Amino acid sequence: MTNSPQAQLIDGVALSAQLRANIATRVQALQARGLTPGLAVILVGEDPASAVYVRNKVKACADTGIRSVFEKYDASLGEADLLTRIGALNADPSVHGILVQMPLPRHINPHKVIEAIATSKDVDGYATLSAGELMTGQSGFRPCTPYGCMKLIESTGLDLRGKHAVVIGRSNTVGKPMALLLLQANATVTICHSATRDIGQHTRQADVVVAAVGKRNVLSADMVKPGAVVIDVGMNRNDQGKLCGDVDFEGVRQVAGYITPVPGGVGPMTITMLLVNTLEAAERTLPVV
Image 1 (cartoon, rainbow, N blue to C red):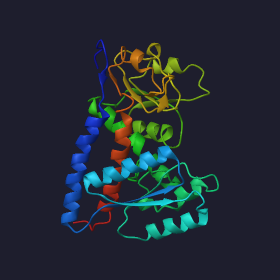
Image 2 (spheres, helix red, strand yellow):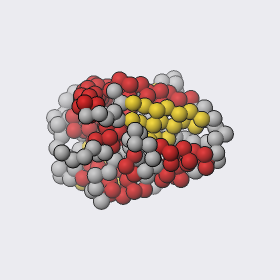
Image 3 (cartoon, one colour):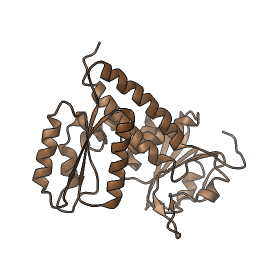
């Protein structure tokens, strides 16, 4: 990696478009064998952000030839009714992936819902069994956001073997699986979080930094090693109401070698990796030839 005057942008929109073209080709190959991948998307309640996310997922399915089954329910839907519906989708051979959009209304236990999805259809990769498969190196589904981050890092040409990677954040959906995926790629991994005493002490030694805490400016220019790859998973609003990430973008891009913008970095990749997981779920149902 060379230290340039300004970091090279890692374009998640462009990379996503490349991957989606490949997905569409693979979907056509499956359709030629009489199989159309199917994704069921369930939305409970009226959360406006969730409605946008779901709309984007359904559109992405349509664009690549994946059949989507979109089911919307009132916030009053009972937990038992939702679990029954998931059970029916588990048993439906035309549905290869099931996604329940979070957050759910308070009276529904999200853990119970996630665990109700068949492991073979857990395309979000959130269930305990999927997490266990990731930890033990099995071929389960990888959570979409960390999986997308790995593809973004890969696109820079950086070989992670022996490199030092720092993950800021320890959530079950991003931080922990991100660390495991980096570990699988033979990086040396440090996880920083709210109780870490001096995050900069760790990030200044890092070849790769993934910021995933949902807090503005958690990573500033003086915390970054020149030439490092910086992946910004955060989604926040600045004082002007404009979308921004966890990284002080303008400052850090003067030091880093590569950086993802917000928006246009990790976001498009998350949905793309959901499509990849759904496609793979469908492929796994075919007899081995």
